[in-house]
Length: 363
Image 1 (cartoon, rainbow, N blue to C red):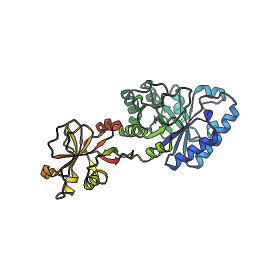
Image 2: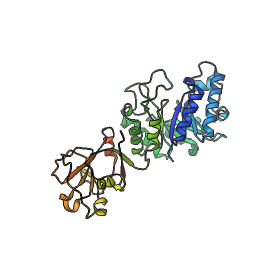
Image 3: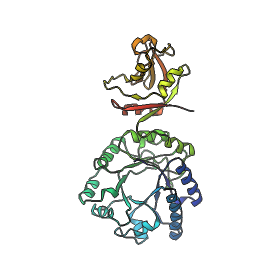
Image 4: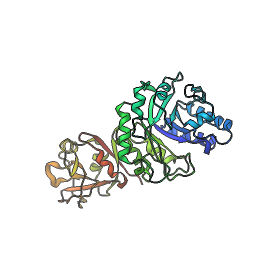
């Protein structure tokens, strides 16, 4: 089951502000927290106390907490990788290994007596995961999560992201990746020019980033990496349909009530006999056979347009299509809306027989 997550950085924030953010996110269905223990600069006892207080608050709300660590933190706190009671006492559900080991250590850690999840870094295309699997880990306790990248142009390329993610899915492991809030102001490091996993996501609206990750069918959990996301962004992510692509559409003023009904309340699937020009959803022409589809807004068709055939197209009247290419309009086709520009690239993720939907862009 996929989860929505937020990130908190107690080294750079106040406990009460973190609690307010956690409570708000939880109200919108967020059930996972990423936090970071990569630095113990300052009063380590105070830092640990703040971590515990915040984590306990999140746990009372039923949220899963994963803590990012590296070898330096183990050294500073005199913790052994073979004895994880410190993290159990901290209250977290798992630890993310920012840097890995030989494979045997990770496998052994998945058998810890506290049932902590061991999350490993997905943003590499080496044989690291294969090596861990060769040591027979407890796969119920092994999960993966990509990195995030505060430096502009340093995020993962899409092809590399696919290569890395497919390795984890081949083993059936739970996966996660980060999206970047456009409203947040800080992360774990001083520099932050957005904080996505994928570079192509850096300036996209947060809901488009998440839709893209879900559309790959490679990512289970989507986590907002920077803090604090706005309430509007939390609401946007909470309303995403994780099971199918739902496109946000700007509707033409001339669109009729029946056409709006077809757009927003009728089920749609990609007809199996594929055209290079359009994605056809044909059931509406069957259901509404005999209804009138008056001619209106018959400009030439552009990629991303949502079109419904009008009365001049006879037996095709009422059929809905998504334009894949620019086309000349014979006058028999009503342009009823357009998928918003930022997510038109998601059209290419639809495959024959996929289900999809639309929602109106409320600007």
